[in-house]
Image (tube, rainbow, N blue to C red; front, side):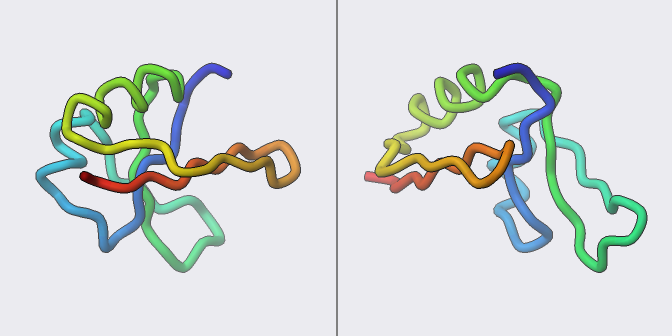
Length: 72
């Protein structure tokens, strides 16, 4: 996979979003905000691992991949 990667929603930790280099945006037609980065998912997952997060599960929803992480 290549970027951009969605990394959070409007309720996400601003400090973590800053660490990931995420930008907050609102897509036309959506009633919510989301954070994204231009990095590929593997780059984002490596950054999150360095903060103590571990992948618990992963699934595909249509053409979207979703990872569930847990912080130790």
